[in-house]
Structure formats: C-alpha cells, structure tokens
Amino acid sequence: MARPPVFAAKSNHKGKSMSKTLVRLIGIAAFCGAAVLGWPASAADYPQRPVSIVVPTTPGGTADILARLIGPRLAQRWGQAVVVENKPGAGTLIGSDYVVRAKPDGYTLMLTFNELATLPALNPNAKLDVENGLARIGKIGSLPVLILTRPGIDDPDLRTLIERFRASPGRYTYASNGSGSSLQLFSEIFKREAGVDVMHVPYRGALEASMAAIGGEVDLLVQFASGNVINHVKGGKLRAYAVASAQRLDALPDVPTAAEAGLPELRLEAWYGLFAPAGLPDDLKQKINRDLNDVLAEPGIQERLKGVNLLVQPSSPSQFDAFFRAEYARWGALIRTLGIKSSE
Image (cartoon, rainbow, N blue to C red):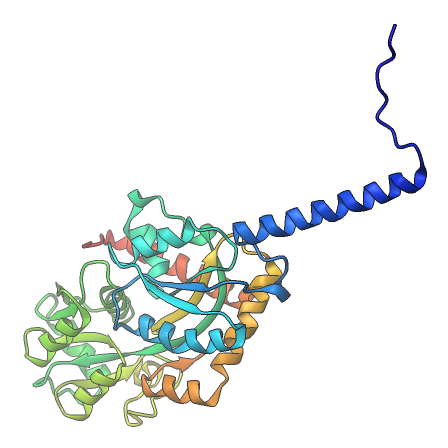
C-alpha cells in the first residue's frame, strides 16, 4: 500500500530559506495590498497619493475659503496634491454623510463648521451619527458673532435695547438664514440669555438676512463678524451692540463684549475644524494635526485668516474632541427643547 506523501523539508537550511522567502513574499503582498486599498503603512509614509478635503457647502463660503487656503500649504508639506471637493446639499448633510461613510485611511478629510454639531437633532430621520462617525483632527478657528440692529434703533447700549424688547413681547423681529440655521440658533440663545421674545423671520441665506436688517425689514440680527458685516457697521448701515466673545474685535474696538454689556453667559462663535472618518489610526490623526497646526502658525496664513476676521485657535485632537462633544450636547438640547426643525 502506497504511503501518503509527506510535505516536509529535507534539510534545515532549505527550510529556513523557504521560510524567509515566504515571509518576504507575504510582506510584499501586504504592502501592495495596503497601497491598493489606500491604507498607509504608517504615519511616516503618509500620504502616498492625493488627499481630498471635502467641504459640505457650495464654493465661496468661509469653509471653502479656508480649505483652499490651507490645502496648498499641506500639499507642499506632504509632497502630494490636496484636492478640495465641494459636496453641498440638505444644508451640510450630504457632504457630512459622504465623509462618515468613507474609508478611515487619511485620504478623505472634511473641513466644516459648527452646523455639523446640529445635524442629528435637526435631521433625526437621516440616521447620521456625527458624534461617533467622525474623528476630530483639530480646530482651525472661529468667527465671532455680533449682536446687531437695523438703522433707526438708537438705544445707547445693550441693556437699554433688551429693555425695549422686554417692554413689547412679540413686537420685534430677527432675521436668520433659514429654520435650523446657525443664525436662528444664535438668536435663540441670545433671546434665552436676555429674557426677550423676538419673532423669527427666516431668509434664504446669511447675506439676505443681513440685507433685511439693513433695509429695515427686521429689527435684530445676530450675525457672524465677517468683513462685509463689519464694513456695514462702520458705514452706519447696522448698529453693533456687543460681540459674543471673550475679547473685543480689533476691527470694532468700541463694541463691548457681551459680558461687558451685561450678558456674561452669552458666548457664541462660528467655529471651523478638520475631521476624518471614525477609525482613523491615532498616529495618522496626530500627524495630520501637527501638520495642520504648523500651517496655522505660518505668518502668511495668520495674516490671511486675520483678513477674514477668523480667530486662529489650533488644538490637539483630544481638545477638539472634547470641544465638539460639548457643542453637540449644547445645541442638540436647545434644538429639542425649542422644537426647531431644519428648513432643508
């Protein structure tokens, strides 16, 4: 009866040689497979191909401007192209959902803003988990928020303005860039802190909201301190009563902070940050964070960001994660309490 073949090496020398060859082949295959799948072998090897920064809004907004400013500087450091991809729709829902579903390999990032923290509460049927579905890489900075009124309201200070609103509940109006928008949420926080009843009038966008206040269609505007808004204040088209931040603005040094004006708990900001799909390896997250912070520290970048009134606020991933979770809880609670729905 024939004996079955025995698969064994005839000598230790050949066995060791075959083992080493097999190990090398497995290593090469694993490396090639990682390259094909887009997974970097380590943070030191990243990136090995172009990186996409998704902006979940149309071109021209602040998030888009920041991505196109920071992207080329990262590309120069990385030796790979950084491509900005605009994916607007349903507010920022479409672009955010796209990134949540992307591979956590470092080749799909997202530069977005404070609206991200409000998406699940405003869109409960979307099943989008931004708290656990995204990795926080780092905060970029924030735009301060101004408490403004239309021309013709000439109260000398914020306390007097609040007394005016309290004296006539429901008579006065405020503008926003849509139901569930940042401007509505900022205004509702102001109403709560000031103890006033001012009626909501939604418009199609932030620019339209500003023009409504300038034209006297509404009385109150709680708006980002952008260059255009600041120019309207300087030109007398809007009256600024306070900035809801810790410090006064260099561009409007005579406008007090909310705390100085009598609302010490009123702190509002339109923040911007860099995200990635959840599951991004920690060493890769740390590398991208370091490179982002190095870019934000460049004098030329700081000068450009100052030009759009952005306060540069770099952070570590853990600091940004804690900040985001606090924002997520804060705005979600407000939206649910007031029953605010998205207009998208």
